[in-house]
Length: 120
Image (tube, rainbow, N blue to C red; front, side):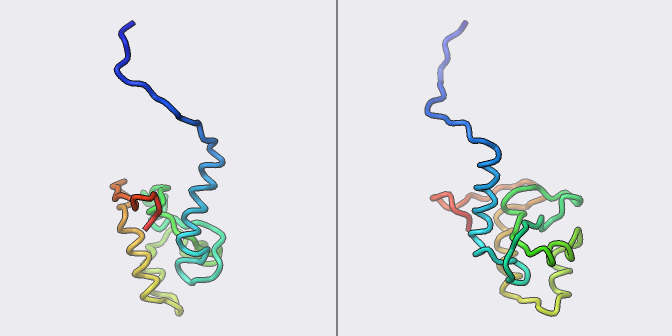
């Protein structure tokens, strides 16, 4: 057997459940646990580009949403739906745009996170 020119050291298997919970907590924390659309308390994550339309389950395509907004938006275009709401807010729209700008959710194109691993 040929010798190995590399080795893996100090690795630790992370349980999927704990990893998923940490992933979700980071997204909620970045948005102060508020719905990205209406600013009410958020209790779900919304795929901005719906999975049914090619959206990926990546942080850059997930934003916190209250159940009301998540259900009402469903699989429609987020911007079209958001602008039709009586409470539409350009500042929240800009923030969602900034969040999505980190990665094209359909293409899987990655933009780096901050050096400390936090999300922009």
